[in-house]
Each structure stands twice: as C-alpha cells, then as structure tokens.
Image (cartoon, rainbow, N blue to C red; front, side, top):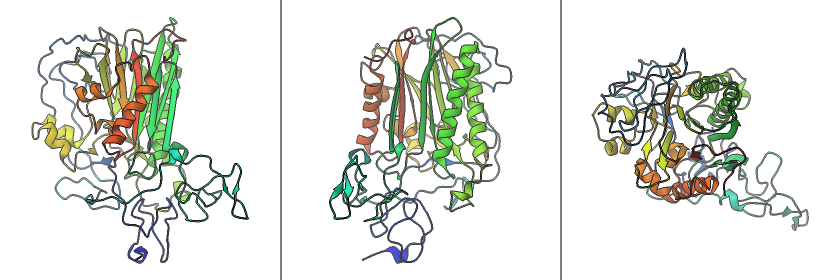
Length: 462
C-alpha cells in the first residue's frame, strides 16, 4: 500500500511534498517504498563552552622532531596534538605538553528541521536506525552509457538510460521519464591523480548525494624543490547547500596554496591563509540568492569542515577546522603510525576532559556534533595548523569521517592502507574508499594519499 499520503516531507532529503506525489521532486526518491536508512551527517553544536583539553603526557621521541618556526603573524593559538608527535603551532612555536585550545562560548543554533537536545543544545537530524534498510537505486557507477528507448520503444544509440528502471529516457532535468528517479550526479564518484598525489571521493551507500569535495596538486617552491598538496572538505549535512560549501572551500584553498607556495610563503603560513580563503568562499555562498535554488529558505548558512596537508622534501604541514583528519603511516610498518589532527567535535571534548573513554565517546549519538566549521554562521574562525619533520619516508592520509569511522585508530588506518601506498597513491585511495564501503558506507567517503618526502618533479605513481 502506498504511504505517500502519510508523508509531508521526503524521507531522504526532507523536501516538502504535495498530496499525490509518487517521487520526490528534489532527489527522485520513490515515496512508495519504505523510509530510507538515515545517513550519518555532520552536525553542528553551538551552545555551551568547549571543555578544556588536559595536559598531554611528555614526548616519547618516537622518531619526530619539531619543525622550524615560520613567520606567521596573526595565526591562531597553539593546538593540542598526540603526545608522541611534537610539532609547532601556526605561529611556529613548539607545541608544549600542556598546550590546550579553549573553545569560546557559542550562542544560538543553526536552524534545523530536527529537535534539539535540551541537555546539550545540539541539534540532531538523525532518527533511530531501522533494523532493515530498503533497496536503493543501483550503483551509479554501473549506470553508464546505455541507450534510452526511441519512440518505437527501442534504445536510441548514445542516449542516456535510467539507472533504476533501465528503460526510461532521462530528461534534461536529470530525471527518468518512466519511473521518475533522479539520475546519478557527476560528484557521486570522483577520482583524480596529480603526479604522486591522488584522491578518491564516493557518495557512499546511504547518502542521496556526495557532499564531500577535494583538491590535489603540486607546485615548486622558489628553490625549485617540489611541494604536494591535498585539501578535503566535508559539507555539513544539516546546513543548506553543503555540497556547494565543500566544493567552494576546496577550490579556494587549493588556489591559495598554489599561489602562495611558489612565492616563498612558509608552508604553514600558506596553510593558514588557505583556510581563511576557504572560509571566505563558504561565507560568500550565504550572500548569494540561494533561495532561488533551495525550497527551504529557512535553513541555515552553507557550511563544511576542512582538512589539508602540504608535503615538501623535508616538511609536513597540516591544517584543519572540524572533524576531518590527517594520518601519518611510515613506509616501515614496524614504526608507529599516528593521527596528526585533533577533532573539533563533541566526542573529542569528552575524551579530552576525561569524562568518557574514546570508544564510549565515539559510540554516542552526539559524537559527530562538531564545534568548529567554515560558514557564515560559525561563531569564530579558528584555523589549526601544525608542522612536522618526519625522520623517515611515509604516507600522509587526508580524509573525511566517512573513512575514519571505519578505521578510527592510526593502527587501523595503517592496516587498511596498502603497503605500496607511497608508489601507488590512486590505487591506495581506491582501496581505502572500498574499505569504508565494505564497512557499511553510511557516509560520503573522501580520501587523499600523499607520499613523504615529496618526490622530484615529474615523478608519478607507478
């Protein structure tokens, strides 16, 4: 029996429905089917002060030493990193064991169609997950290039065919004329290889669109030595146009880095400037006439998280805002891997304050509430940067939570990463995305892989 008369909004994208609708006009969801499984969106937490981080234990000297201090006037305060990875903050000062970042009190909360938790002020748009999930449309990567039927019912050569019913013609708006399903977007699965650095992004198995974006590339420093970069952004699902936000941020940051590094800007300062540029690009989206493309003008401003890495012949620089991460995996797997970023999230605060264990915090439904993001409604932009000088070759993994949810610990990430990742970055990025999809694919998955040190210009993956 059809359930469309019971629905006021699309179960997949929350688009308002009209009586008698069989398919959602925004995402093409089949309204006669059972409600779709909820994805794991990125959420924002605005109310209340962040809990202070405890002092980190002393450095154990596990093959790392602090990088040289750049000139970074106006850069943010020091950040807390894993105790076995001493580095420098964005001002170039060594990160002391007691250095802790305090989150300023935030007021208000971005509008959301979901209820707020009275205890924490966090808004969630995730209902409880059902025991079974309905069958979704076929994998868009298997959709390709079949011919649509001609007027006599036979396929027309070269025309697009619906990925769901495999019979209907796809109209200019991207919907099937036969069954009404929305067709795969270009961003559902993306891959890019730029010399020795590569990235892969996938919609995942539960999301109706890919809200992640990335940018990878390389350039030369003034002395002619190579520099590699990767930027990964994760759109905040409870905000308006999260896919536009992540794309704008990744492009702006990449352009900023590619312009600053050849000029001789220190990579850590260049990363700080790139985060600021990304934030400005996302904030600008709120000033556009977004209601012309959105049917819910009451939604909050576009927002996303940010994480990036710059690799040179002797320096590794990371920068982030939000809960996307950077991992370090040595080529010599007998050496310990490490996570180089610290989440701006509810779960990280609980762990840092000693109120919950890491496993308890990340199992909580509030774990993915973030306390830092890029967007016009962010309380205050607080870019985090750190630089390191590894004493051995390794691989840098830059990813969204769609991957690290299935390889949270650095040891788990190292185990999932192929041994030849430094030589085959694109293959390795595909393997990591596959690891997340095999684990359930509840979220969009994006990962970039960079070798350290940066190989000479002209060298690529094998």
